Figure (tube, rainbow, N blue to C red):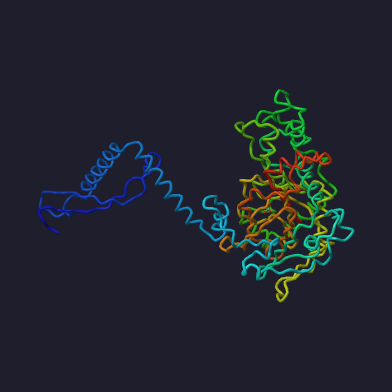
Length: 503
Ligand SMILES: O=C(O)CCC(=O)C(=O)O
């Protein structure tokens, strides 16, 4: 093209000044004017490019110099927003959408489609239509269970029904729900166990990484402070940071705590099992997911723990209690590799074992009427509660979508108990692409994942403020003054115990 003025519009990709100016890659039109009459093709390409580059750079820098700091900051913010949006789109799935809905504070979540087994009559017609009430194969009201779930003094029809019925969801096989069958006293007993007895050595907790916790547990220390027996001038008041404590004092396990009678036999079995089945699907699948139980069996001792940080805050016992997020029961869990420490099988607490065994017994044979795809069958004689996680949630906490798949035995049910504040529980399908259903889990409720649901994504996006049952609050009565400190903790908390069979 010939003319007195050649206008060449070229698109030049600007260098991405990512760290300093966060400019996006963009194609900018740039105009070069020439007074000559020669076509551009005759101009030496390298020279033309250099001129263009110099021109663009000059233009860019002069513009940048003219911008105020505020303008630059604004641009940086806008860019960050655009990048965040781009990532959101990349990870946008129906499960994430549901999580986002329930996590949102402003605007508040849409609760209209939550399954509320405690108020079925208030649910939408669509949800009511999906809820199926079935008989438990055994009443939890029987004498043998009263020690576990407690004994009510009076008859209350609705409450008594909780010990006779389970709830299933149409077209959603593998999820079983039992409405709170516990008395308030039975719930208090379990809550105390979770705080006082289970949240301590030798059970591993999230606090162990950074804090050299006392062997008798952080709750004991918290009690001493609560009762005025310990104050901040005492040397024990602040738990030392592991980063500054000598190795031998922070040793987590000794052989007395490991239940070797259970452990050795099982370990050998599993090692053999996995060596013999290296081509077996489960092992391969786990391999792909970086979640290989089988590989791990051979090198239990190589599981390294995260290093203690010297910069975590030094906290009072009650502050530390509120930082407790999880402890593990039975086989201790190695979170970085999502595998069990097969050389650390601790004795499983008998009372929690009994509770889960009762549940396994009463759900055996439960089926969705008119749907042969779902009959729950797991004989109680096969049930071995071998591992458990206790989750301690504060009101702002949540648990992201995940699948519990570290267990070799995925045929056994996963049994989960809720105490304290109500939460929203999401449970979906085999991928996050499946839209989950949302369920209220209230204090005392039992949820069971079995069959296909055992391998499905689930999570807890929200703990609902103001939902602590009256009977778990402090009642200032003399006969239950011991509950006061627990009531204080529970005023901002939810506790979940979930139990699995590993082999
Ligand atoms: O807190 C709950 O109800 C669920 C806990 C859970 O999904 C887990 O620990 O894997």
